Image 1 (tube, rainbow, N blue to C red):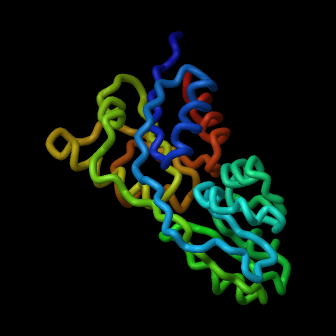
Image 2: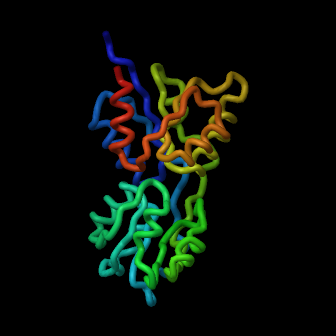
Image 3: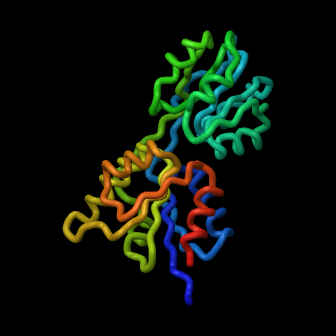
Length: 236
């Protein structure tokens, strides 16, 4: 039996989009299309350590702002964040799952002065949870993820391609942008059948609410491995 042709749309911002696309191409016979729906811009905010005794990173996009913080124990959310932070020479103390859950909150010792470098848009305010455990939490938004206004050309090529189509979704905000732009682009004929592959249940909930995906799956991973395992299983 011939293999099912699989098209995969990568929607995460650069530089992660290129990295994920290359890993997917190397993993198997996927038709990979790259269409970042958010672009990352620096806010210009200072990321000085101050009195911080530990660092929290919830996205790989914050890692470029940490070159002077390598002496601090670093708590990360998601395998992709931990991988990029480790390559940058940071001292990884804890790797959390794809969301800032209770395991992450409890992993930070009481009395820690925790510096959280993040984007402007954060899904959850972590201050109450940390402060309830006597962790001195300080967040600095060092970058902003700004949405694109039109679908990249690769997304149109993907939507018009043959075979089974998967859309990789790594944030609820990306889901919202994709839903708006894809539905606008196909307002007359309707969007083709698409399978949303989400990095967490929270993202999957956003996908269900925003777009008529024919199917929604959860990899529970923001890294390439989770997507590759899922897509490889669906190839035949």
